[in-house]
Length: 302
Image 1 (cartoon, rainbow, N blue to C red):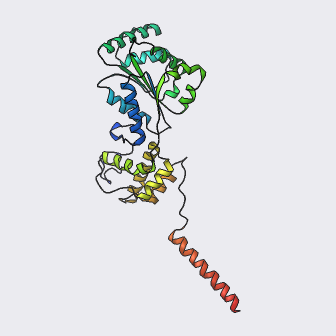
Image 2 (image 1 turned 180 degrees about the vertical axis):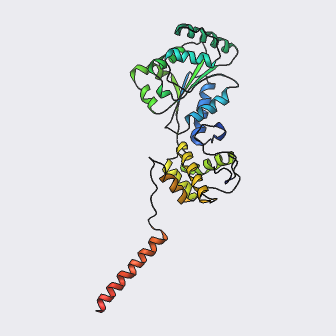
Image 3 (image 1 turned 30 degrees about the horizontal axis):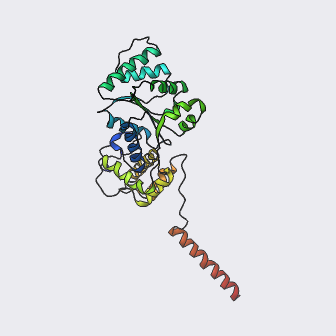
């Protein structure tokens, strides 16, 4: 709708996790570094946790792109799987032929044979699990048991969890202590810091084809940051609404007023504080002072 008006080739603030728009701010870059170091060191279990909207799925897909040339990848975006469905999903991702009625044990054996083949070809298997906080207890145990498939010196597969903070609470339970002890690398994904927001918005606009001057004023960026708390998904939502509002008004600059309207149109966010002293309120206050002084002077002269 507003793309042509602002000289964009596509929407810059879509909520879908498109790796073309990945902005490697401090939190994402640190998380990516931890993941790559852990996987290169052959660690069995790694976890990345973060609040809703901090970009875990985007990070997961970026990691997938970085690893696919050197590793076999099993990407599981839906964790609501029984142990049998979990093993079936891994076989499907590896394009393995399995009998229609294969049991859990048979699937485990098929996976082990493939792991041995991949190990010989020096292509380790990495299983990426998104939204891991929703995975049933039995399936988490099935993953742990699957990780027992290893040689005397090397692990044959590595597992990366991407999850909301509730996952940490689940791992603290006694029944998952064996899995918890195997997670050797962890990272908690942070939101954008205030000084990173302007660059984040500019980066996404540039990827979407924008080549003009700064589109969001400093005041507008401040409003969006405070309302979104630096959460990328919320920033995308608010920036998208701000561009819609700017387009509706026919203005080429997103100022504080437009940003405020975008925030007010979004339920559940901290609303921006109104300015205490606007030009109008200052004039009104001065007028009141003059009126009071005049009234008191007139009273003394009577």
